[in-house]
Length: 177
Image (tube, rainbow, N blue to C red; front, side):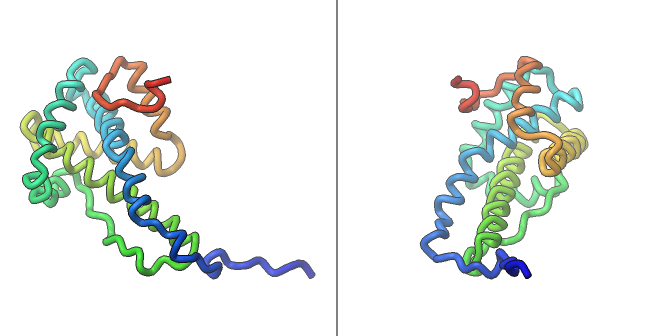
């Protein structure tokens, strides 16, 4: 008889291997860039903006996001418009295996993307009606589902936007090469 396979959930993970600050920092590194790729793609698909208008929209949202207190108090409003629900509360105290650590990392990334999309929604609120924003974020959600399913990734999305001459004010590693 062969060796019995060990359940990966039963392999203990040392507390030193769990660096929640680094996980959060890594998630926040790409959250706004990914959110803008999703929103810019949806803006073009819904024909709410032309490629040359996206940099101005990016700048408007950037200026709006600097008022952090105003943004944080309105996240519920943005969730209502976007049709998004806040991901479950993050708790790193229960991480005991690599599988649980990977799940925590994925949830942190989802939370960071969620917050970035809500901030963008609030920044766009002056330009678009609630109905337009709901339609925009429905299309964004479909693109995000394609990414989650593996049919698309953020690099491909970036290349699609570049082929449509969409330039936003984010500096990425691929644009530096």
